[in-house]
Image (cartoon, rainbow, N blue to C red; front, side, top):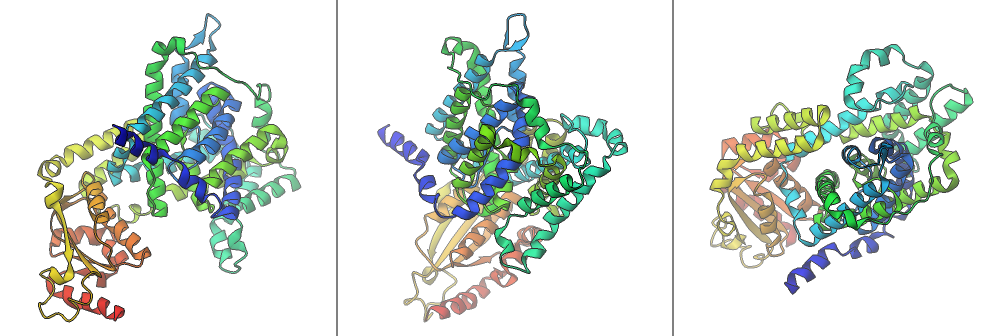
Amino acid sequence: MLLFVKRALKEISPTKNFKSLTTNIQGDILAGITVGIIALPLALAFGEISQLGPIAGVWGAIVGGIIGGLFGGCMVGISGPTAPKAAQIAAFMSFFVIGTTNEPDLTAAFSIIFISGLILVILSLLNVSRFIHYTPYSVIAGFMCGIGLIVILTQMNAFIGLEVEKNIHDVFNNLGSSLANVNIEALVVSVPSLLILFLWPFLEKSSKYLTKIPSPLVALIIGTTIAHSFKLDIPFIGDKILNASGQNIFSFYIPDFSRLKDFFGPALALAGLAVLDSLLSCKVADNMIGDRHSSDRETFGQGMANMAAGLVGGVTTATATMRTVANIKFGGKTPLSSIVHGLTLLAILLGLSSFVAAIPAACLAAILFKVGIDIMDYRILPVIRKIPKTDLLIFCVVLFITVYEDLMVAIAIGICIAIIANFKQFKSSLPLSNQYSSKTFAHSNFSKKDNKFASTNEDLVQIFDIRGPVFFGSVESLLRAYSALPAHKILLMDIRKITSLDITGAYALEDLIHQLRKKGISTYVICTQVKIKTTLKNLNIIENMGSDRYLNSPNKALPAIEQELSQFQ
């Protein structure tokens, strides 16, 4: 028991976060400020959706950024109110009103948020958050593309100078009316801003100094300059701030534990959504930066952030996919960008709102439009017609339900389909001790007995033998098995005996090869099965790893390894 507690406390320790804060100061500050400005209208909007008020939305983003950044498990994650969580707290608010006034019971709302944070802290200590790593890639891809479409569609009205619709259904229902009432003056701002964002990568090639300037800041400055120079009659961010100015900026709420029986159910549901919402966003970030977040520490960080939100009157928080992706795109690499994002919003709330108030809503819509495009999973989209049918079905179902119905429902259905479709693989999975094995090249069947490199380079090459099904349910055990291998400079991944390969397993192999390449470890894959080769080829994995690294015959292993070993002589 003591060992379990010590291991849990070590896992949630924020030491790594603190040590990283000074490693990318300039990039993190610029990214944090940019994302903070972008997050403002979202925070105000989610505050309104939650029925707790726009200022509550800003406070949620502040504590999510600062507390979530300090204690979270994703180095590039940005926390704050999200659409699913804001909608869920709004649903609970209909059950908690004051007497016959029909006014929301704010004490109840913030008590639920605080208790949900407490539950998250407990979950992090129980070490259950790691199961998020078993999410099929097709679910994550559908989630990413769904969120991207939602962002693009919901920002369409702001892009053309109209009031933003409350939900995706209203966007479709009022699409004809919106297109018929386009504000041409708004397009004078939004179109140039969007063009800057798309053209900036090409401009950066002409000058190394431009690479240090985030394109969204350039778009904000130019878009705002155009709007005020021509005195355009369009919506500005300041309009929402003025509408929210009637609220008290500072409030403090003591959790009402006397009503714990009433609050526990909603708080547990809120905590469950926070785990799914946050950790899926972290998985998206992992895929983008090639890193691996700590699920338990992220759950702990969200617990601390939600407890703080409950105390100061903030909307419930989670790691936000769009803001996290934006942070990565703008150069954020450590939790400092998240902290700066929170401090930027705090500064705005404390008196710098006049600077942000001058920004046109159409300019921000252009930035968010580009972020929505960037969120799309461009790993799966180019090969969408070639992926396995089961993965294609899961991707389409998750995408459709995410856009038209509910994110959490989409994920749950997608995972259920994946489990049912892979039931045979679960049943036939070999014990870990039999599914993976390793040996040095000199002691393998690939090496000749008189191999001149056998004795002098025995420790440089490892053979990693993988058997059985490689799918979303076995990827974690595969990665753990590899991490247990002795140190080496060359890896021969023998997958001739795997029985099936889904898109999650295929991309896991590609990610492993990519990470090893970054560490200077040469990797070869040997596979003689036509079906497996077809899957790898359809997903462009053979092309991405290099066709010379794919060996379709055991006889090709020795020449390839000897050529690599010759570099160490």
